[in-house]
Length: 247
Image: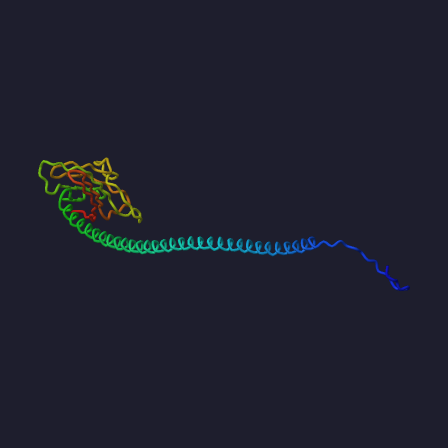
């Protein structure tokens, strides 16, 4: 046993078995762990990158699909705008055509109205010369100052001798009663007449005559005659005659 120097610190010595295989195993284990970590990191990065790329690819496809859809909608809208513009133009043309048609119809109606007025005048002139006409009206003084004889003759113009004229006539005296305007029916002053409308029925002529008594204070000015023919034609007219007494 070697000599020991007195007073120096003595360190304990540990005797460890020498095992070279175990040391190699530990080194290989650490290398395996490091390699596994590196491979795991690479695989994680690759997988994560692939996932992001897939998401990006999906988003791009979705955006492209939406873009195509918007393009289709835009195309449809453009077609609708074109159709609307064409419809508006057609409506405008149709409105103009209707306005022109209405204007033409108004002009035509105005012309027809003028023609009607003209033909009515012609027919009226022809009617006045045919059918019922007043042939005579006489008023004669009697011996009494307020009593007069009257005679009204109506005839059928262009009578053929076979056709009866049917209608009626209304006779009124128009004047002033105590300073005020007054109208007196012939029926009220003549006992020969019982109706306001005196009936007519004759082939050539009909005479209406009798006596009339003027009311006190009444001053006659004219005789008003309204005649109506119903057969063989329709005709109506009014005619006034001045109050003229034959001497």
